[in-house]
Image (cartoon, rainbow, N blue to C red):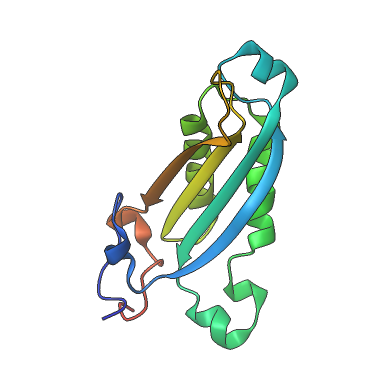
Length: 150
C-alpha cells in the first residue's frame, strides 16, 4: 500500500512506494570539472538528470506553487553548483548536488545522474555517467512523510 514505509538512505525502487517523483531531465551545462588540467582550463559539456521524491498531494489539489517544490529554484541551485564550483570527480559533483537539494528543498529523496560528455578516455565514448541516490534518514525526515503516515 502506498505510504506505508519511510524511505531510508540507499533504499531501492520497491521502497519508494508512496512518494511522488518530480524530474528535471537533460539539464545541460558547460563546466570546468575533471582531473585533467585541460578539462579544468577548457571545460566541457555536462548533462544532469535529477529525480526528486516528494509528497505532491497538496500541490495536486491546490494548484499553488507554495504547495510544490519549485523546480525552477532546483534548477537554479544545480546551475549555481555547476558554475561556481570546480570538482575533480563526477562523484563529488553528484554528491554536492544531492547534498544541496536535500538541504534546501522539502524532498524525501534525490537521485541524480551526472554525465561528462565525451570524456578524455583515449577513445570514443558518448559519456561517463555517475548515478547517486540518497534519502533523508528517518529522524531527519520530520514533515516529509509519505501519504498515509500523517
